[in-house]
Amino acid sequence: MGAASEIAAPPGISLPRMRLRWSAVALQALLRRWAAFIVVLAAVLGQFFSTLIGWPALPLFWGSAQQSWLLGQGVVLLHALPGALLCWGLREQLLPVHWLAPERALPLRRRDLLRADLAVLALALLPLALLNLISIAAWRHADPAWMRGLWPAAIGYFLQSLLLSAAAGALLLQLRRRPIRAAKPALTRSPAPTARGDAGPNLALLLLPLWRGPARPVLHLLILACAALATTLAAAWRWPGQASWALAAYTLLAMGLSARLHAQATLCYAPIRRECQVLPLPPRFWPARLLLLAQLPALLAWCALALLLWVLAPWQLAPLATPLFMAYGLLAPGLPLLAKEGGSPEGRAGRWLLGWALWVALASEVLQS
Image (cartoon, rainbow, N blue to C red; front, top):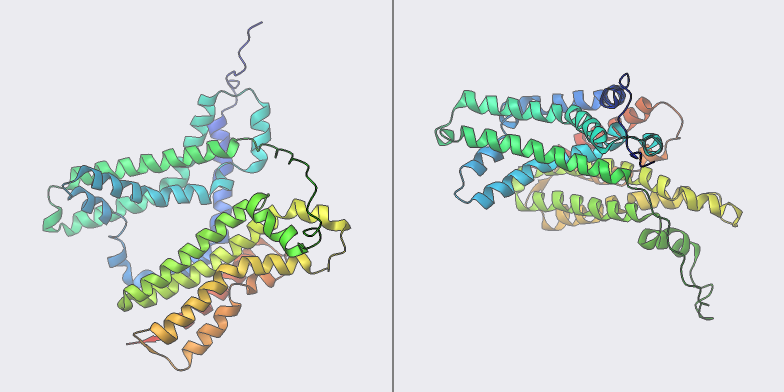
């Protein structure tokens, strides 16, 4: 009578340790999968290491130098954003879906869940924290005159940024545990006679779920992808001297977001595809439309890029590399998605990396001074 609904775990079982071990194995597998990409990226950026290493901590010093406390806190919030995005991107490694049902079934205390969350978040944020510490050490070695006297405030801002990233990650994991509510049954109402049959399968099965069905995460990712690609192109137009970097970022985002969109769409539309097996749809109905949906931001950005390069560009374009870059840009985001689903994750990541390396190599030859 009156027993508590939440009890502590048995002494021999440590939930944080169990979660840490599983997340460490998952993160190691992810690192092995993308090791080639990291090596290539390090080789490309290695010659700029002395310049790039100062960037992670620079906003902290700039915010410390401001007279306005609110402006400094705004800088801290922006500095914490990459850590929050990192936690969001690694959410499946930090709290996989198959852990949620056992967690709900076990009488675990919220304090134990929070401790486990903070443990795996510390593991995920450790590389980013080390990068910032190395950046701070590089600035300490350079010791510019304008930074003298700002060190205590900058280190305090760094700790505050790290805590904000961890808090955002903990909030994301708590939201991930939130049970999905069943959709309320719609009011039965007879459709208008003229409207019945007008909606084709594309509208009923593909577009309507984006707006008010299970594919709403795909719509959110579509908006994010369009905004990110538009930002890179706007940066290339605003700072013509750094346009090569903007084009490289554009290629990375176009391929990465297309792959993520395809994976998200495949997951979100899976229930609808199962229910539609009895419908007389063409065999390639779903694969072709999900591929086109994943390519939509890249195709829209390609049109904007063509306008930027051939109409608004203040640069001289390489006569051979530019057509090759644009032609390959129509194919590059979709080529890894056309490959068969079989094979190891390392093989799929290798195909993606090879396609991106070729595209970014063409991007580096497009602009001429």
